[in-house]
Length: 317
Ligand SMILES: [Zn+2]
Image (cartoon, rainbow, N blue to C red; front, side):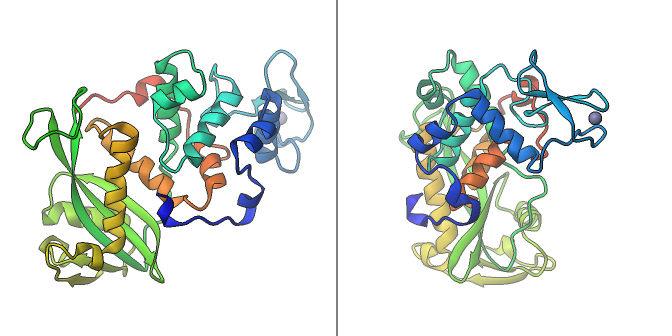
């Protein structure tokens, strides 16, 4: 997605820009812990139990402080996705950095080899936990001018490659609705959602879930977009070849999504599809703020609760 453009601003400028810089800054467990401490307590330790500022660093538990007033023990990783993990902090930091900075993201298999992880299961867990942090439950709806469109994406099952003649068994099709907020001719944030059909019910539910009231919605002339309550709708009649002119950003979003799915995952799978869409949107929305992406992924100061293994496993549908 390099063609979307890059920019740096604010704290982004101080964040390591290269692998070498990152490696120097976060080479050891204590350097990672120090970074977590500074993010958590920028003005010095504060006990989450009683608010006291005096604490001892425990010798027997890694990076854990004991409050001098109430005795409560608090780890620098408490409340983050790293908490109670047996993996070193450096591994978490590297995984989040690679996932946040690779413009195409990284698969569990790539992560396993890049970080020299012992098992694929560990790499998969790491990826799954980082991905879970990608949706902010309190994110703001899109507003202003928003393009919306829908597309069909082939998916693969088992180990069949996705690039096969049409009609072959093992390859199905899934429907995806997309929306892009457009500001002064440039794309800002996007949303993607798996939908069951292109009917009015599905389309209305998607639009109402992702855009704010009074949004100016631009679509093609597909009738399912008509009559959405509290939405200012502009439908543009297009020929079959002109969608990329009328809806340039949703068109590019969809084509980048398809390219990404083939390139990184060799074809998306139906299982957990929404999670892959969330990952794509997460990276797209933070394409200019990799530092924010890194912080969000590690759940530093975020509300993401630790995810036990059984919650990450989804039955295939
Ligand atoms: Zn205390």
